[in-house]
Length: 155
Image (cartoon, rainbow, N blue to C red; front, side):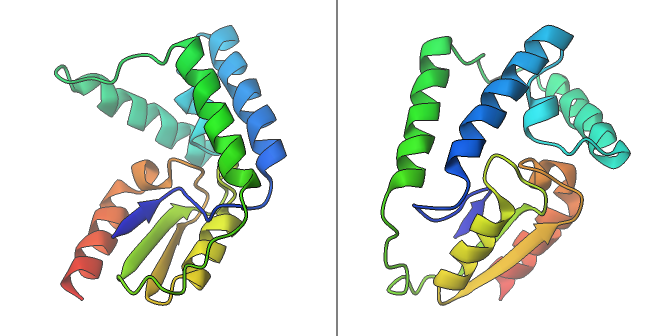
């Protein structure tokens, strides 16, 4: 199993995540940029470049494109994320399935420390943190992620 950009229930920083997400969505609207530009990537030169490349790749796909999220769906998603973050931690030690946990090392939406905690709590987990990457770490480092995923499946 591969888990990307996630952490365990009851992870750290949930209150900050909601406000950052709303701020980044608003920033996208005000700057006429796709909110993914702010939500998924770091604000470094590397992150901004990766965001532009990712959004360009997304536009190449003409079929089966994601629909824009409605305000109602966005609110429901934030409520679900908030509820997940407030839950009591589950015992993950019983899960014996091999797991690759992947994330950017600068993820603000799901703090990277939560991904590290998730990997520590799963007995057969490997952690892949991509440097200078946010929530879109697997999009920013797609070649490395595919290599990591193939190696994981081969092991």
